[in-house]
Length: 346
Image 1 (cartoon, rainbow, N blue to C red):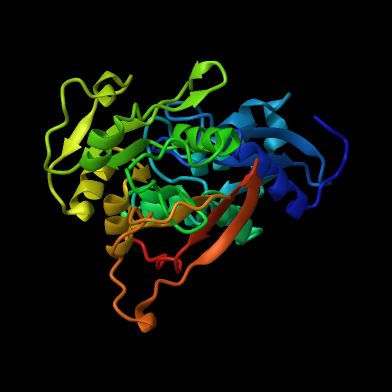
Image 2 (cartoon, rainbow, N blue to C red):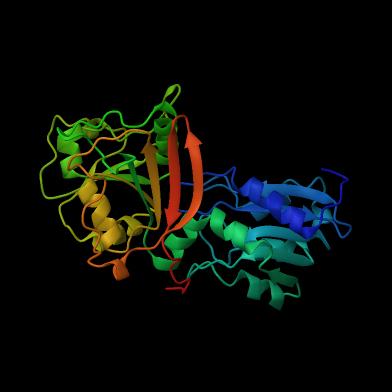
């Protein structure tokens, strides 16, 4: 593919670029792979394109001009090669059979069934190293890693508010607080999620469609709509005309909702509101990421973006780590995460 030699660090960064070409939604992780000759020349590249397609390592091996070039090569992979039979065979076995001499991966596979590829390859005589560019890879595929480590979907809570923290005017009107660029960003993020979640209060007040749209209409991937709350969803509600089937949970036990969604292969949840539901996720410690859009306007009044999040005194405040601040048109988008969850495997 190229005669330009790469260091393994360069190859791992390239593997991450490849990985991010794959879909963020779905049950499988984004993974990229670069095969290097003993001299550091790139022999082939691959990435995972979604459930049912070849894994990144298989994709790269298949791209070799001559299969025998894999003998003695180094495979640089963003995630530990898998060790289980799913819709495809174990990547660790494929690398062993191909004659690869060395495998370098960034992050260990936390899956109960899929982990162990590194040990299997070492036992077969392959030199295996882990941890290269681990922080960057961990951050890039955090939703999948969190879901796999904790057996519940990664939860993003989103809201838009005025600078004084109001999600609506005093009469309840809220369209639109933010501008077109911020709203387009929301739709992009919706399209990357498996499901989008709102409370019944939002359904009754705003009648949202809960679809993901781009410049040409509906986005290719649509997050399935989920409504939480005991009030019945009206038959006339627009969400009932969503391209994906509506799921309505009448329980207030959010942990059980997430557990059921995880069992149904949901790995990412995008919570759109309203304030009561968003606050409930935060109060329960179930919000993995906050995406907040701040508009340069003031509304005043009682319609705050959040309600009770379980903080009774300043000592109990929920500290956040800001991971990104960007300007979108006239609005500011802030992405923040709470303290990282324990990476213990379940």
